[in-house]
Image (cartoon, rainbow, N blue to C red):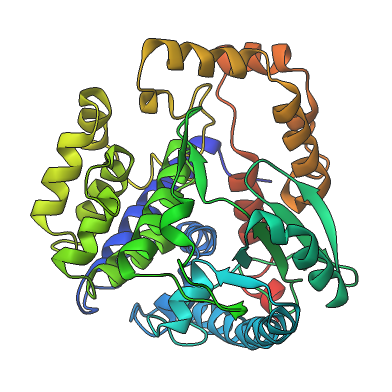
Length: 409
């Protein structure tokens, strides 16, 4: 039995904002919170959902036996899983060289490669790879040679899963969780319906066969910001992504930051401001004021105003209730807002397929009646009662239904 959802909602907010402050400060030192056991379990659920448990394992000095044991176990699982990922990337590199395919490992893989994280500090749910459109077929064949099969295709990427291996149902990370691979040909996001595409910034001008790094720190930052902005728009931000951006920012020069505005410096980076603003809220002085000011001038007035008052809780799975129109404030015109609302009321074939793929492949959606209801029923329920997020309830239940670390053993 879950506690009252109002209690869960309040507990998630307390945990999220407290963990964000704990991780973002320059050195540990906050006193151990005087939480009851329910709040500690909600803190574990929050840390797992936001991907920061292993980072906190050597950072948080809070004196609570269950908390410390959970963090230590999470770091061990992530380190063991990292070895599997590193080995798989090496195999991809070797096969891509032989097949003369240029591949760019994205996000977590690249952050590890440049040394921003040590093995065991940053979890990776999957491996993201960028290839040219013409290389999709040989790259797919390469992955199949490594024991993968295509699971489903969405507008952003193709998802490949191992032919063998079953999901591990546990709180947070588990060493034996299958490593999925997402194959991209474009780096783009819908915010909320118009597409921002920065592929040309990300793919190297003179790539070599095998694995290639981002062409610059500015290109990497552009991708991290666009990816995070897509998550903000969908209210699925993660503290881990804010930490990524703050760490990369410490290595960037003014010239690197200028890449946000394209190679010629004449493109708009309006989409970057809400994420930069959120990072600045928690990681003080990570983002240069000049960058914030310039991105803020690009950003539409309404979105800029709303962003200045939003928190990590309200923009992530820590906000327990579903929103009928998440990201509506990102619309750049009334016509775009109407297109978005119309798709929410009457989903097109692409949205229906995406939902079906999610229900089929995501453990936290299995046997959840809400996600299979007709859209009209869903809209009526949205308007008449608060609807909890299925992903949030899944991680909360996992944290509450077992002894603190039973699922981590």
